[in-house]
Image (cartoon, rainbow, N blue to C red; front, side, top):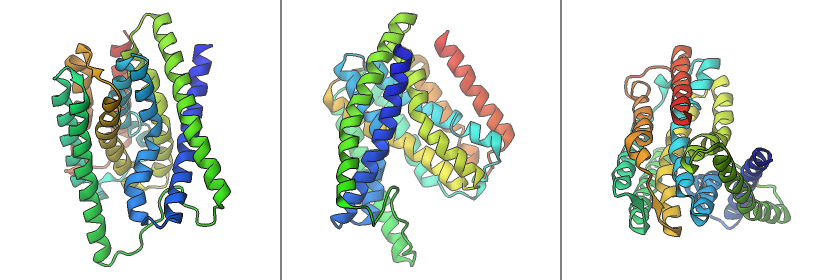
Length: 313
């Protein structure tokens, strides 16, 4: 039963997160907030809402390993699994992508995160540091986007979930479903994931690194598979890099203001370095103009399978 309830909680989380994004985006546009600001803030925060609610619920339930494992495991899965599986289906022409600056930000965020982890706890001070770094990144992206538009690129795409014809009552329904569904889904998933951990004699950290991390990475996996099949490699690589950076800076930054997140020594000895190593594997695709071929897809997917074996044994 805990497995079924965990799955139900995950489904509720993902559906509620999607509803919240649609409702918040259309409300913001209706209030006159520029589409650029909506894309950089509301969409980014909304799509990470499931991970954030899981982390907050885990902290309140005194399961900090699950909160930290969710983020670290998701970042590792995003690179090895979310990029690996689509590459098995079709070569992703990442040689054409301009993601150097965002990638540098992601590596800087990863190193900052690891440095703060060696303090032994993510407390309110670490949270403020992470959120300060996030603020800098968002301001830089806003400045770049404005310069891009000033140079003649005024064809700003509508934010994800935007629907100018959506009636007000539907916006309210989406917001209500999101605000109610997120905590309900997080509660179901965290409570039952903890039961599973106890039943199999593993730690909350392991459940966070595996079951929860893979579950919350499923939407990104679905998106990247479709983007790869449509040969939109820039969407694939950009979304993975942006998601990883946001996970580190925003989710743990906000969650650590709710309560301290103690760092299990296993993170310092193994998992954080796997996350960093996976991030560095992107160097050939970002800087050396290499495509993610099927061979790379096999390598990345195999590395993730090996990581799961090591974590679970």
